[in-house]
Length: 363
Image (cartoon, rainbow, N blue to C red):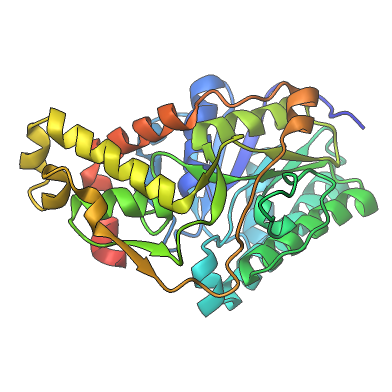
């Protein structure tokens, strides 16, 4: 069933103060200046009001501090702002944290999604039969499990086989979204993305952790032997993919959004070391701005690499096959990894006031 066209969108973006959500908000308001965007975010450790500073003066933007598990609040927002589109990013997403404390992942990712679905059904279907509408759910490639070296990349037909509390909670939420479409007729789409990177990425994740630790002359922790493989997607390319699903996607369908870009973790770390070494050799001002960054100033950032014990149940390889999204929606990443990682390194070099606060409070 093809989507009904929504001519003017009033969007509720859950988790819009997080990494991917905030980049989506920047992208959407930059491209659709007439649309209204309301962000709902609980501002847990990874949610950051500063991520939304580029749009905070926009008259079509509003921020609400609240929890997706608060059904009354969600219903009030849907009604008061005449919301016709939910883009659901809000999720606990760090695998390590799901291993040491899975409760929050069950609460936010499963109960939170279920609460949003109940609110959407009540307001959009039970109360006023709002057609068209859209509930777009952001999921992950991790629900598909892990791949061997020669296995084909994940497609939308790959059976779910989640291996961590995080991926299991996301798989559960995916199934709930599907069920609300097939059972009640809620107009939904889901996208499963590969690893994102780019501006505003919380510094506990691999790429921003490596960049910021180099600038602080701290060890660069690499799990196991660093040979785990990930498919990397520049965050604005993810926003473009979601835009295509919202505008052209068929209702009830899943779409894989990937970067066609597999790298081992250790090669990523070595590339970031090389890029920062080059930046410091060519720009003397950086040594003044980052006086702690002694290793990279001396062209030897790689010496900071430290191999650490692998995490429990560590999936070895993820890779997304985005053929369906490409063929049906015309999706193709704009950034190569080389252009995207260069932009990302330069953003962190220019935004130490953003990440230093997070380092000081979280690590």
